[in-house]
Image (cartoon, rainbow, N blue to C red; front, side, top):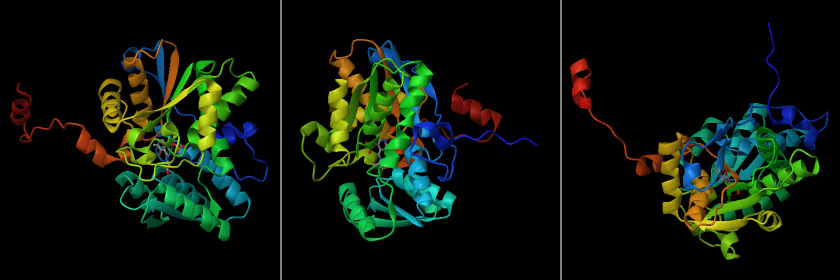
Length: 353
Ligand code: F0G
């Protein structure tokens, strides 16, 4: 009998995380996600190299698991019996999964009617208590912050610093896989925790000699939900990329610092540009991510069309799995389906052979 080696973010990256011997080493197998080379789009994007970090390969299908495992382990360590988050869907799926794993309660506040079907299915499966608020994500987060101030429930949104700590480990993985930081890091931006976390991670990698350079941070928001681009909160954010339908990001200054300190940018991509990239990723790369994730690639392609990319090596973060939003997939892709009799002749006829 052999025991498989331990894995997960707390095990692999414990030395760079604020955890101690008392922190439970929980894991659902998060982290250590693939970094795969682009087959076609790197040329279209005017890059020498484009790599995709497949954060959709985390156990609940999004990057959230990386930070959630740290936040929930610390909550359990502190004796918390319940956790709460506001979410556009992925944070709630992740929080619910780790709460189930640890045998604690979870409550998720989601914008009514605006969460993709797969994410809602996950929250239901994990047995979390779902509160559908009559409002958007920003309002749900305000309510969750106030409620967790008043009641003994741990808030596990990315305003919880352990979330950022866990999410920074993706930058370490990118540096280790490439032997250095890339020239450009392209990332979708919603509540802005992830861009903040990557910038922190890359900073630590440079300080400790894991990397010799800092990447330029290229953040992309959906045009209908682009407060960091316009410089002021958006009261009624709207986009097909429901994961980033956020008008007043909690980590606003983290995102603008990442942009400014790295010499990067935060720009907007339209829903059409997001859906074009979403289609290209599937048809040209074999990668089925959710619309919000495609924003990073949409942004690179847009910059390339404007002649604003001059080669170099970029990493685009594919944050969530396409299976999470089957409705957008069915609406966007064209199905090539032919009915046939279940016989050799029937299938030959259907294929025109
Ligand atoms: N991509 C996906 C798939 C997301 O779910 C999110 C955020 C982002 C990108 C943006 O990351 O917020 O750190 O800037 N989803 C949150 C949620 C808001 O509730 O699941 P961010």
